[in-house]
Amino acid sequence: MKMLKQAILFAGIFTAGALSAQSAQMNNMIKVGANVGLAVPSDNTSMAVGVDVAYQNLITPGFGLGIATGYTHYFGKDNNGYSNNDVGVVPVGALIRIYPKQTGFYFGTDLGYGFLVGDNKVASNASLDRPDGGFYIKPEIGYHNQDWNFFVQYQKVFVGSKGDLPNQDYNVGNLGVGFSYNIPLGK
Picture (cartoon, helix red, strand yellow):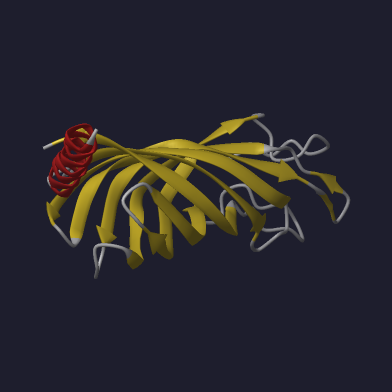
């Protein structure tokens, strides 16, 4: 019986060591997550919910680069007599992350282009066309461990003055919170 206990203990230590060594070598990962936020400024939308998918490669243990996309749905709201339509954002961008420690605080951003999708008009009772998209940025700051990231983010698509109606600027942006799960791909 003593030998069986020792064998189980050895197997457990060996497995933990192998998994630990393997996870330390995981430089490539897919990040899958979700977020929710309040529209800022909020002329034409009230809130946003979204999903994120990204590929990240840790260039060094503290610095990651990759590509990011997803979908964020902004809920339209009535404002100044306009019945603003919902709008979706599909970003295509570069992912940049800085991890000062192996677990704990991190920060970074996604930069690229945000495609706006949905109804072709800004509002259901106005004839102005919705912009097609613009420069996209999503800075975030948060907490991470090997498997999870929890963060606060600001997401914005800059469309210039396109989509502006009298007494209302067209805005697609939110301040929110989110999480993502890291799926390791190997070395």
